[in-house]
Every structure is written in structure tokens, then in C-alpha cells.
Image (cartoon, helix red, strand yellow):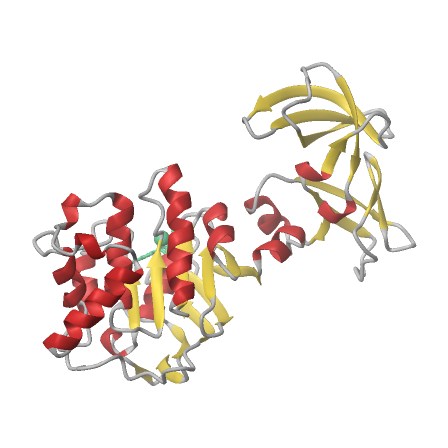
Length: 380
Ligand code: ADP
Ligand code: MG
């Protein structure tokens, strides 16, 4: 529904026209502090964003990850000042930019924005596009800074071209250069990779993070793609239905997802229920006893496990066995759907990944072990 919105208009909104130098924020200590940020659209049954909390360090790259409609864009727009929160507080670089009594306009927040469609001005050269972002800087300083950021994103030789003469990846780098030019406290990017095809997408993930790191820029990036999120961020915020589910570094989040939603959103997994053993290190399930990576502090007997497919390793005489129902070949590995035998004579359907060099066919019996490091106790 926001697709038709004019991003040029929004871009103009964040230009600080009075400023004749970098933004006035407290340089050197830029960080973001968001407390209980909530947006309840009129007539909506539930808030689009519900008591969102986040604190970032300077230079940290954060992604907001979640399915379509979970409130990512609304959160980003409230941080930028394009959307008025229903309640909550936002501080950037030690300065409150929004609370119940006060709201700083977008252009005073020291924010750089990169839109999904880049919103480059088609009638301006690359150089002019970037200079435009510098408002009323002195002409000489504008030129110098533009040269500097174009060098930073590796596009110096394209300064005189027009946006339509550049590839998608190059246009994105121009948009990033334009956003970085005024030395903002924070860069906000909404789905920056979604317009790029697979190969370029991977390259841009790498390039964008490199540029943000080089300039020690704090960034909040919105994406619905788990691979984008893991590849670019220090920490990931997983959201669902307006509510933050978990905030963690990619590795930690993958290994220790907090609940079933996070576990399933971050890739395929097997959700299996069971009873915790007295040693607090094993769980009795339908498919047999499953070992945990370490003793749990869980208080309940009845628990839920997330077992990653790549943690199930085919071996000759494994603890678990079952019949292969289906083999899906992906090139990098093969995904097996296996009917795993249960103690009660039934079966539980599980997903396993097997190396591609192994010849496996439907109907075949396989046996496997489960690596404890890829087992996690999760909440409902
Ligand atoms: P995401 O970016 O995660 O896909 P959005 O933040 O765009 O999600 O939307 C979150 C929820 O808020 C959705 O249910 C959407 O329909 C609703 N929403 C977004 N913008 C508006 C608006 N301007 N008016 C009413 N509802 C909106
Ligand atoms: Mg969105």
C-alpha cells in the first residue's frame, strides 16, 4: 500500500535545508534508543507496531526481519519521522527526537534514507544527485564531499552519467552515497536488496556492509529475507505481527531461537515435542531420546525442540531410522523427507539434509544421528 508513495517527496523531507554543514547531532556518540514504540493505525484491530524496544551502539548494523505486514516499514518510518507514533520514545545520538511531548521533524534527525526504488532524480547526473543531498553546504565543500562519497562507493568515473545509464547495483550505490554524503547519524534502508537479482544481491550485501563499516555508520535495514539479514547485520530483530520476537546476533539466533516462530522463520526446522529427562540434558520424544547441547534451565517437563535438518547426519548405524519419502535436489545439498519410526510403531515426518554425493532414493531406509549443537529448546 506504500508502493505508490512518492519517495522523492520523502527524500526531500529529510534534507536539512538550513544546515550549512553536517547534521547537528552529537557526533561521535551516535546511537539509537527506542522505547515502547507503538503505532496503532486508526480502525486497525491491533497495533502495527507494539511496544518496540531497541538499543544500538554506534556503527552497529541492525536488520528488522519478519514476514510481510509485520510492521518493519512502519517502525523505520517512525524512526525517520515520516510516521507519527501513537506512543513511545526515540533518541538518536543522545538526543530525543520523539516522545509524548515532542517530535523533531525528519530533516532535523540526522537521518540518511535509502529507498527500495532508490528514488534517484532521473534528470540529474550522479554527481548532482549526490550534491542535492547536501542542501546548503558551500559549493566547494559540496563538490569535495561528493567526490569523496562517490570514491567511497567506487563510482567516481560515473559522476557525469544519468541514473538510467547505470545498472541496478550501481544505482543503489549512488542512493547510498547520496544518503551518506551529509554524514548522517543513522542510515535507514527499506528492503534495499529486493529489486536486485540473485547474483547481484549477494554482491551488494557485501558492498553495502563494507561501505557502512568503513564509515562506521549506524544502520537499520529492513528485510523479509533471512539470508540478507544474516549476511549484513551485527544483530537481527525478528518481528511478527508488530511484536519483537527476539533480538540477537545471527549465529546466536540460528542456534538458539527463542520460539517456534523464530526457529521456523530462520530456515527449515523440525519441531518436535517431548519430556525433559531428569538429567536436564536429554529429551524423550516420539523418535527417541534427543540430546541437548547443554543442561537446560527449563522449568517445565513438557518441552518443544527445534532440530535443524543439517544437524541430522546420515550414518550407518545411527540412533534414529526411517524411510525416505521424498528427495528434493537443490544443487548444494539434498533435502530428504523421512518417515522416522517412533517407539509406538507410528512415524514422525522429518526433514534432513544430505550431502549431494550420496545416492539416495525414495523408499530407501536411512539411519541418522542428531548433532546436539543444532538442537534447541524453544517456546511455543
Ligand atoms: P512490513 O513493512 O513489515 O511489510 P508494514 O509496516 O508496511 O509492514 O505494515 C504493518 C501493518 O500496518 C500492516 O498490517 C499494514 O496493513 C498496516 N499499515 C501500514 N501502513 C498503514 C497505513 N498508512 N494505514 C493503515 N494501516 C497501515
Ligand atoms: Mg515493508
